[in-house]
Image (cartoon, rainbow, N blue to C red; front, side, top):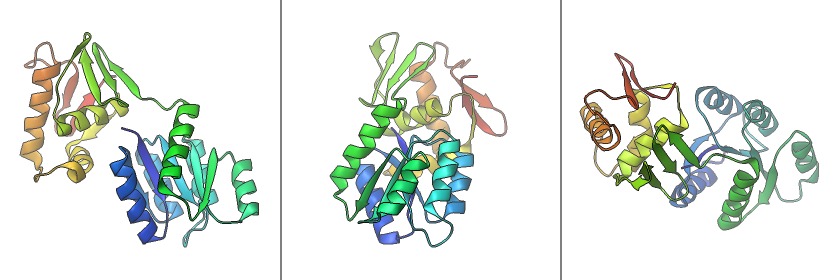
Length: 221
């Protein structure tokens, strides 16, 4: 699942885009300011940033610079007919722009085009485990492994953050919005155990999903 940073200070537009893009299979985190975008870019990994040029605090150009420094492709959201802003944004390295008002499906098409062009990763390999994010399929040594939606989401989060320690709080925050039922710390422990049972050669001595005692978990080095 591709993770998108949305930088948009119009709450109505942001809420609508988050809902639509989530239905299209993207994970979206939204912020309203340049400083908020810069903070998230330091803390998390994103596949693409959607940036409104005009922000109430800071500017979309500043958010674009921060994203490009992290190697994140950028699509600008611009006011219709604002040619000067479009030119400036493209000169800064933006990968595309969409003029408001835009059709949501056109935006999705632009997003997928940029992701293909920039080679954003959609297949992850963790030892003998292969995760195809486009097909939402997981295989071990070529055999498909059946995972629940939450199990798959947790595994994909680990794969996208390979080598990084993910705290239990971060994991709970990430899976909260797709869970039909309340997910607490104990429930997370159960899901980690289920993943190990399905993916590890020896679930009692895991080599894939490693516990970092007192903090959380890490997959890969």
